[in-house]
Amino acid sequence: MNRLTVSSRFKFVSLFSLVILVFPIVCCTGESGSNNQFLGKFQAIEQKYGKLIEAKNEDAKNSTDMNEAFQLNQEVQQLREERKVKVEEFLKQNPLKGKILPFQPLPGTHYSVDKVEINLASPGNLNLKFSTTINKVVKDKYGSVTRRVTIYFKAVDAAGNEIPNTKTVALNTAMPRKVEVGTKIESYGSWTGSKLAALSDFAKVVEITQEEYKAK
Image 1 (cartoon, rainbow, N blue to C red):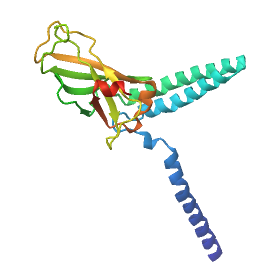
Image 2 (cartoon, one colour; image 1 turned 90 degrees about the vertical axis):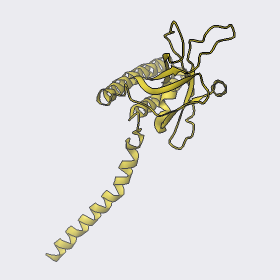
Image 3 (tube, rainbow, N blue to C red; image 1 turned 90 degrees about the horizontal axis):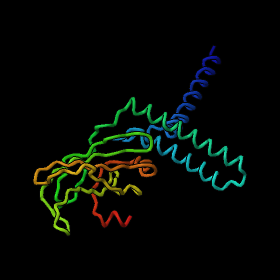
Image 4 (tube, rainbow, N blue to C red; image 1 turned 180 degrees about the vertical axis):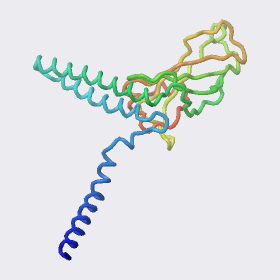
């Protein structure tokens, strides 16, 4: 009886030790760490499939066998379809449209940014809407009133560090007939492809100068 009890205890301790050893591995290899505060797992899905597609495309490019290259291109198409399904499933359960994002403006602009929100999230694209108000009427070099609001921006992480490859620009597609102080204008800009996949640690949208944008 004692032998059975000791044996049972030994098995229990061994099993418990195994669970303790395996648990961190499972946690570390899962996708829990890729769940962004603002975007959820959207960018993590994009990053995963982006890397797979890039690798397949590179293999196809370097292949000297026509049949192999054709097969690799077919696999790329399959991966794109799979990404589309995964992203749409995520967005259906976790709608991002209308979500407000933290924003840091530039001082001294002729407009103020009232809010930045997600306008559209779809496979390979995260489109942002910048709602602005004109604070000062400015003219171009020809003396015409400027009706365009161009916003250069990038993404930063929680520590304020720039996330590489995220500099881009937002423009207003609708031009108001008359611009005066108080005029509301909406500008739109997107993170696509590799820019979107880089947003795992996203924490804030930061407005930058045209000079910084051009130096990217």
